[in-house]
Image 1 (cartoon, rainbow, N blue to C red):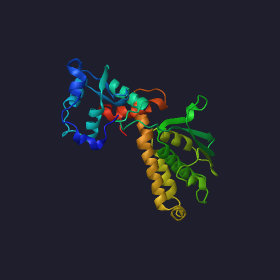
Image 2: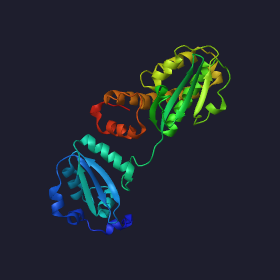
Image 3: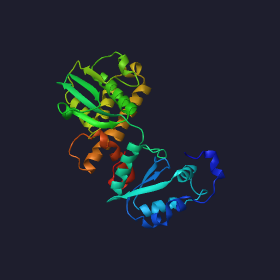
Image 4: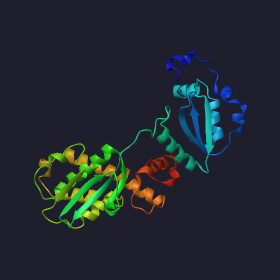
Length: 295
């Protein structure tokens, strides 16, 4: 059973890992990349970690002193009964394996990557140049795959950005009326379509390139459209317009453009990223800046 935090001060300052695991364990640890697990006496995985040098990393726990590490590490060491490890071919492989194990095991002492996330695909539909529909989906079946984009991570960020896109498209309809109620909600509907009084040639392509991370021309077109209407400020407050612009800009840079860079850097031929691989791509971007995959 984990030691209560208030009892830590009553424990000896001597690191218990040295005696618990024995000299043979410490002598055999290789200086290779890999993943390690800390186990409790009850057989639960307490923590999963990775390193480019297992020996160096695990010895840092063996030599840790109560006065030089965080209380979280102290508790981890006190509650660890054994440590296991496995080597990998590269540090990249270690990073991906660590991420996989954290998602599967949800260890008590790991804080990142434990909770399930929502991953959306955005299905873009067209009826000539006179109508555009947007559908949020949890999958991209073959019959509509060509006009789907994603996967995009995050329930609120994605649906909020799609809401901003809907409000932008509302201006192309030629309507002077306020936004429909459903488009003013924080989380807009899973499906909504816009019909234009005057056909808008090229709009479908502009939106497609935006969602695919190829071009942010949509933001420029949006600003040009709104600037032509002298009365738009009275209908839709400047604050709301700027808010939507920021939502779309952030979506493009953090999600659409990120996906585009991942596909190019890792030479992924499919224009869609698989939901089950998305967290791995995020981990690679964080741990290996040399890949030049920017958020």
